[in-house]
Image (cartoon, rainbow, N blue to C red; front, side, top):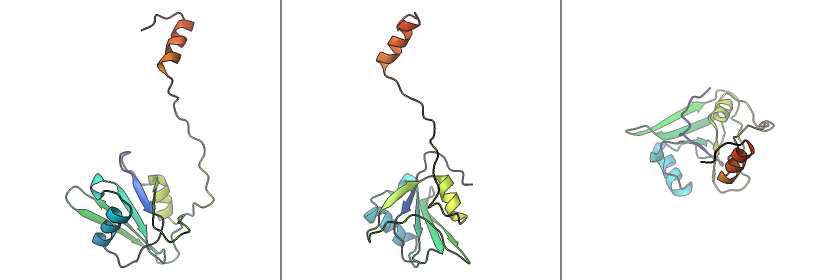
Length: 136
């Protein structure tokens, strides 16, 4: 399980890249093609054409870091775009962890999550009046 702070976003490229690309070439893709800033501290995830390698590049306080994983057998499964253009989408750390473990998320469903409702000030005042509380 990956443990990342909530401020770190994970951007995954929707098309595969050349497996010979190093950190500088991937940074150029992040900046020029994906339109993102590497210095924001987010993780940028790329899969090779054979999908047996994944590369994650990110800014690590004083330099660029690249993490690589190569599968000895099998391929990584991720949702890629159907067209030839490269694009980016965001994923959660849990999803990346599952992908890196070799789990195919194609048929996976996310259950609805609870989110607090934000009510307007007018609704709060009406609630206070219904409960005979003083309005503020």
